[in-house]
Length: 89
Image 1: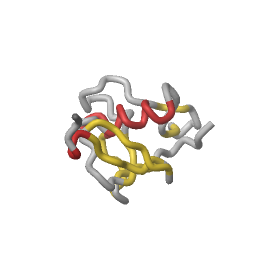
Image 2 (image 1 turned 90 degrees about the vertical axis):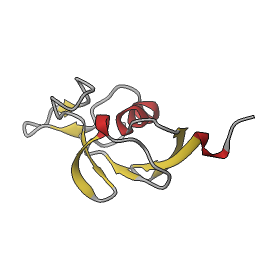
Image 3 (image 1 turned 30 degrees about the vertical axis):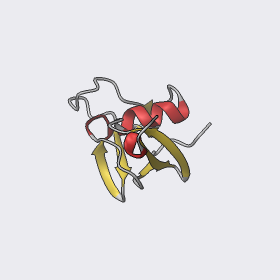
Image 4 (image 1 turned 60 degrees about the horizontal axis):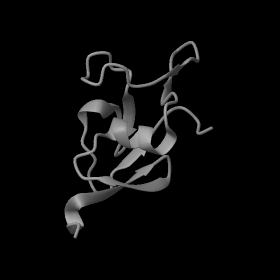
């Protein structure tokens, strides 16, 4: 039996996704899209999480209407909204 709090539902680019509790936002986005860019560089190149510990800051996303949040350092909460800059392919 799985506890009710074993999963949370987040919304990524307008689409709800159920993920295990304690999942980072970066992992939830990878679960939704697979490996693809989640934001665009100033030159238009796709960028994605690289180091997984917040140093490179390539995982920046808009989370709950707050821009430039490090997705690899943010744990998903029930009802969280996540917006990536890259358009879904």
